[in-house]
Structures are given as C-alpha cells and as structure tokens.
Image (cartoon, rainbow, N blue to C red):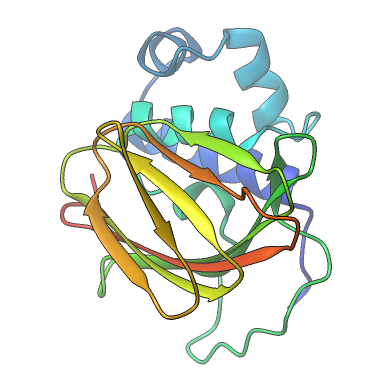
Length: 188
C-alpha cells in the first residue's frame, strides 16, 4: 500500500466526512472556527494544517482526531517507527506520530508524542466522552489540567477526561517521549 502525504490524507478525510454529513464549507467553518478558504485549501491538499487546526476540525465535525489523518489500512498492521512526524506544533518542538488511527470497534487511537526541550503544547478541549491515557516512555512531562500541574517521569502514567483545555510541557533539557491513547466513548 502506497502512503500519501499527511496534508493529502487530511484533505481527503475532511472531504469524505463533509460529504457524508452533507455539510457545506460555510457550516464547517461555523462549527470549527476555521475559515472557508483554509478548509478549501486543506481539502485540496494545498496546505499543511497544524495540530490545533486539525483538532478544531475534528471537534467541529464531532469525529476523532485520527479519523482526519488516517490512511486506510489492511486487517493486520505492522507499524514501523517513523522518522518524520505526521504533524508538528510549537516550532517543531512538539511532534506527533500516528501509530494506530481510530478504530470504531475499539473506540481508540494511539500516538507517540515527542516533546523537545522547551516544548509547550496547549490542547483544545476535546468532546465529552474523550479520555486520554498517557504513558511516559522517556524523559519528564508537566501536564496541566484544571490549573493543576502533574509532573510525570518514566515510572508514571496518567489518564483524564480530555473535555477541558490541557497543556503538555517539557521543562527539562532532554527530549520526552509519550504514548497517548485517545479513547472516544461515542464517535459521531
């Protein structure tokens, strides 16, 4: 199976979901806060959206994040470690690698997030019913929820309801690797 670039995958998936729902660019723009022009360029694969933009679209469409960046897979999937992230934020200090896209049978998706020293990623609230399960694979991360910060290292894990703004921060001088499992109680 030939892999296609992430911006093309996002565009194809946004278009597929938009058409399935019977929505116009006006309706999606209103629901997501992303301009019609940007949505059009994303659908055409003409621009590389940021993590925040993809989250805005996912929330507005009421779909999982990975449903916008996934590529159709076969029944058995072997995933090799990627050298290039699927998406980046914070000037490349926050890098996101999709390992397993959303699966309607399991209701979850799996990512690796790499936070370089000084990385500070603010995540938008996700829809009600979304939970994050995070394992620190290496390094240390500060995760802030409800104005309380939890500092975690390789011996620690955290899970939380992700329907509130949350922040991931690497306050150290070494790289941090996280495994994120996003569980969707009800994929819409």
